Amino acid sequence: MKNTNPVFKVKSFATKQSIKLSEKTMVKTASASNFLTDLADVFLFIVQFFRETFSRNFEFREFLRQCFQIGYKSLPLISITGAIIGLVLTIQSRPVLIKFGAVTMLPGMVAISLIREMGPVITALLCAGKIGSGMGAELGSMKVTEQIDAMEVSSTNPMRFLVVTRIWAAIIMIPLLILYADAFGILGSWAGANIKGDVSFFLFFSQAFSNVKFMDFLPAVIKSFFFGAVIGFVGCYKGYNAGRGTESVGVAANSAVVLASLLVIIVDMVAVQITDMLTS
Amino acid sequence: MNTEQTEQSDINSPSKTTNEAVIEIKNLKKSFGQQEVLKNVTLKLLKGENLVVLGKSGSGKSVLIKCIVGLLKSDSGKIDVFNKNVNILNRKELDELRQKIGFLFQSGALYDSMTVKQNLEFPLRRIKKDLTEKEIEEKVTEVLENVGLADALHKMPSQLSGGMRKRISLARTIVVDPMIMLYDEPTTGLDPVTSDEISALIIEVQKKYKTSSIIITHDIKCARKTANRMVMLAEGEVLLEGKTADFENSTNPIITSFFQ
Ligand SMILES: Nc1ncnc2c1ncn2[C@@H]1O[C@H](COP(=O)(O)OP(=O)(O)OP(=O)(O)O)[C@@H](O)[C@H]1O
Ligand SMILES: [Mg+2]
Image 1: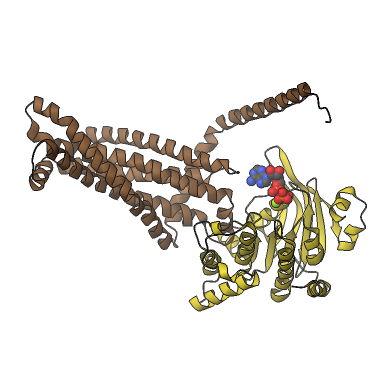
Image 2 (image 1 turned 90 degrees about the vertical axis):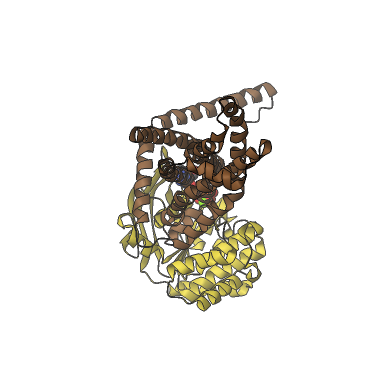
């Protein structure tokens, strides 16, 4: 213990570190083999969610508060991005359409690509970042600082109070945010069309929507609900199951964003396949 | 709040204890993975008494009381609270039982997104559902005055100091008049004056509401003041159980290092 020889110190430091490192790898391999139990955990989480949703005491006030947090607080971000996407899409497609002599198709084309794909996916990815990470961090820190335990002992079901309200708020608000983004996208597109040309807003709008059919709308709306569900579930699951210690809050928030974004893309792919099968 | 008063109540309170056990723990065992935290713990909390649990850091004191309220599931052994086995209760029965138990978390566990007022109202509205708005307000003011923080009503937890958080969290625990109180280090990190006040408050709660309490603490001064009985945990087992005097006369080196 009392050895002050620097070489000895370095050596003992090195052994300590290598022990720590090997412990970490052991933990890693152990967690890899726990894949199946993780899967069971996720399944249980989803089952619990549905059971608590249909229990008698739905936490309506907390649900409204979450709708406000998720919906209203995201409006600035979604408006700006929506408008810019519409604008950029218009400016980019214009020269190509001119080449083919089809410039009159511009509003319709932009509207369709916004409503079918760009609006939903980009909004969902933004929400995965903003809302998913927010849920992961908030619930994670509540878990780490024992606030979830505190709720439990004051005979409040934290699953019902925290998780069910957040997931339903996400399922309902994210599709609304997506419609909102579509609207701002078309506004942005009109602005883009006006940089080089001169189209009245009314004409632009009627041109845009004369091309959009109900079957462009419906699949997009349906998949929006799934985006909302994916973001809500992942954010809450990661936060609610955060480990002990403050670093796990960061881990929860980060992995919530990564997994939610990935799942949004995958859900989108599946949705497109299904729509394609059903409509062709 | 002066020492005379607290000493007096210390002498008075043991006479009120009866031999009826409100919590009875038998051969409790709890491990996390490879680590055996509690190996074999057997103890009783009698009605109306203050039981101080001592033990060095990491000896499993917090784990013990979390097992009592069912936040952690014990591996084996039996925990009876009001003659009900905690391990076999369903969610609803457990909720009913928990309404009678106050739990002060070591970390405070104040809800970050709520003001002090909302923090205190949260358990009140959920446990005592028949209170009117006026009664809730009165109750909140009363407990805040008890912990000496009446002016913190509209603050957010992030605006409070560590000691203030601890006191608010104590207020949130006692606001529902629980029959059993589990204090996890109520005076840690507080200055000596506030510590004494908290110790006095613990005794006052015991006398006023006839609560039975388990008090986990490293603070020997607080332990001496509040204890009717003490228990020392070491190596996952009960090392010694007895009155304050038994601990002071003990020759076990772990115990003497606490009591010098
Ligand atoms: N949920 C958990 N998962 C894994 N290990 C845990 C968990 N809770 C506690 N432990 C471990 O159990 C041991 C005892 O923890 P506990 O918090 O009960 O100690 P304590 O006696 O309260 O200490 P302190 O006086 O420092 O609060 C520690 O080694 C801790 O790492
Ligand atoms: Mg502890």
